Image 1 (cartoon, rainbow, N blue to C red):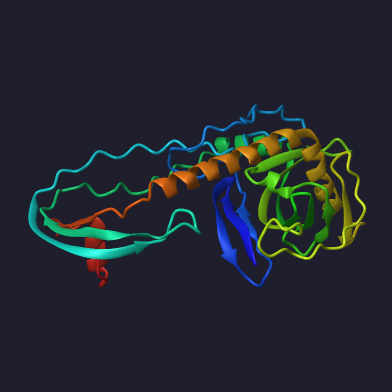
Image 2 (cartoon, rainbow, N blue to C red; image 1 turned 135 degrees about the vertical axis):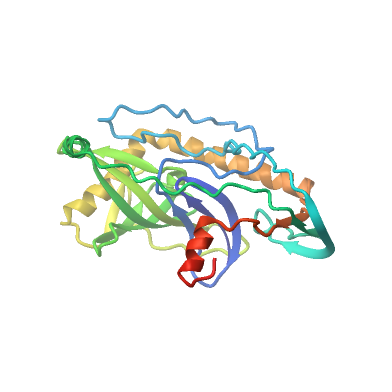
Length: 326
């Protein structure tokens, strides 16, 4: 079967992939910190839906940070180029084939120049040794006092989700310690992509903060794909709001049940914003894909510069005195 999968790290959405497999297709999402979108080089689509990323008050159920919505990240500034005195140059031509930016598009092929240059030692300084800050007992005491102040509980949760026809999701979730439950939800869990850390205020009034490690994939039973997945037996679920039913696991495990319930409480508060961000990501992805098809990339030339140091580095000298190679 052919499915649309993608990867996400720290709310960082890389790109959908087209994979063929006899196993369940999954979309792996590593969601460790606040949502950021992967740098998908411009031009990116002008999103028709712009989710509002306003920080929430600390004591509310919601997503404190932003949600990845397809906006390209700002590229890091390039370092100032070094000026080298070239002693010798060797250039060759090579045929190369590179993987496409988006799997499913044609590979990047072409002929490039590979240039290797021996240059004069530019005399770059050795990197400074790592600083070891002195430990002040008062600072340690202040830090311990600060950490002892009440705050939200924080837990990493592990989620495996299979979304059927963007209408129902089979979810297996736990804390990575053997405690897990599984069941059906009427939420499209694709909307959780782009979310890093979120927080939920439970019925006991306690604030709990979660960070996601999620694998998610889409299945279609309605003929959307060339090959359709047989429709699974679905339990009755409410249609008026976020709802779920547990089919596996210990429903008396309060920690797991609070975690699963908390996802649905979060969606009840943030669902509109999460769905809008998901739509915006899809628009940005399709725009990037169309751009790459209309403007096929070409491989770039490569230049390698190396030199022999006039004065060995301190690290090199230390390695030599210990009988090791620098």
